[in-house]
Amino acid sequence: MSEKVEHGNPREDDQGKIKEGEEEDEVEGVPCHHLITHLPKSRSCDTCKRAKLYEQPHRRAENQSKNMKEARMVEAPTFFLEKLSVDHIIVRDEIGHKGETCTFVMVDVFSGFTSMVPCEHKTAEEVEMAFRRFCGKKRPGIVQVVSDRAPEIKSALRNLGFASEPAAPYQKIKNALAESTIRTITGMTSSILIHSGIELQYWPLAQKYLEWAYNITAPARGIETDSEENLSRYEKAMGYSIDCFMVPFGALVWYKDPDPYSYGPKGEPALFLGAELTDGMLFKGCYRVWPLEQFQSGVFKEHVSRTIAIPNGQWKFAALTPQSVPA
Image (cartoon, rainbow, N blue to C red; front, side, top):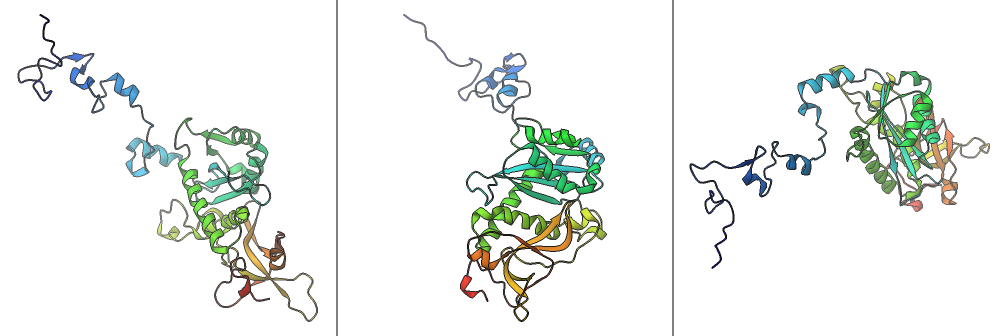
């Protein structure tokens, strides 16, 4: 006659709990009962440490330790272009009107000033050109560039002599500031394209518009005093404010005809594309427009004008309602 085989721990009751007066066995400091499901996670269990080795969380400043907060305060930049956070937006489903496949995004950590440079390819040459345009003559002021470990970014930084602060590899969140900015840019780009009625392939025009509009309207980062409370990103970065027209992307404006008839209109209708920012992100009073006649002919040609006028009444968008646009 075979012997009866009993399962489980003989010192446990029917509910699996250790009977009163009995002590639970341990294997290398881990209770045997823990080995059934490994719940909850135990710091004493090497199996738990290995199986549940999750990504280190990116804690907000208010949730960081005292030592970490002090370290971040010491490392915080104190002037424009001291520290940048950069990354690429990859566009796989809508190539730009000039063959653009990505956008190189740069965020100044001190002020939040953001540059968006549409590029044909993710190459070191295009990244380097974007850095030079953003920095202008202030290039030596940059100390660090926070980025992922993309080879084209690392190569451009070596060529420029900038200090690199690469993110840890194989992380879901590699560069929190740049990645959150990219989400904002993506949403803004979609919104202004839809509202203007301009085709999606012209997303590079929308982002060049936002490079100006976003920085003069969005509040600066790191506002700490009452005197800085209402500063825009442009004001905190440059140290001054600018006077300019505030016109929605794709809205109808009139720009000064460079060669008008003697008794003809001096202003020609066009779609507003934003202000022109020169190297160093400086505004010199010029605006970018798309002449309406060329737009209606399906030909893209950007025109830069210092003199524009805005029609009275509600904004008119020729790409949405061409029949309501005055000649």
